[in-house]
Length: 247
Image (cartoon, rainbow, N blue to C red; front, side, top):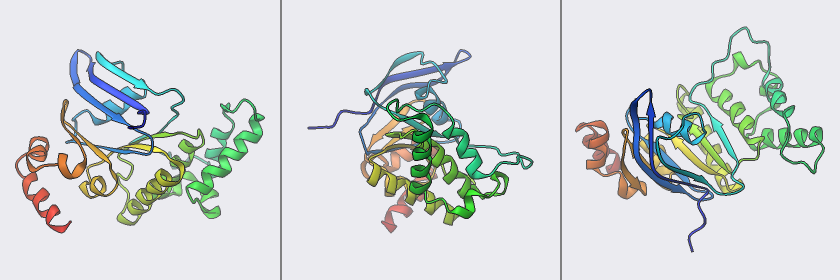
């Protein structure tokens, strides 16, 4: 029997200032699954995530979350002012001070426990914790933002290009960490990515998006040459063929 989806989207449509941005988008994501969203720049991928988060109101279709679904979100960009005198730990302490959903545990105690767990789960070192945010690398900052998201104990995480502007070593670290969280915490992931290696390696399903849904399914079957050509143009065929020869 198929598990109950954490999230079901049916025939979703979004208009912004009278312009159609998304239409005919449908998918499910079950516990512990990874859904990758791919498509060219300006295809509506970030709009889709922000609509799921409630920042945009659908103009059609439906979005249904299972009872008890808790969401975490890492944005595509998080600008840190170089003059901001705040360490990684002080930044996370801000989240700890927020109200907790665990009403049976005193708020301060629950906050300390959530912070300690998030630091352990993201493998943030003591040295990194006392480093000012402005001096963190892109990969290190992503770890801190991930710890922030994990303090809510989510079972569904949204990532908008989680390794944009992160070097290759940092990218591998971030994706390995996400895979670890999926395996050990049972967290489902929705990831926007341009990297087909990431999609093939980590995703259970892929959604091809170019204002409308052009393909959906397991990466090995959904990402055909025709599907990629429709997304990215005819030159995508060469890259897809060359990539599959290496698999």
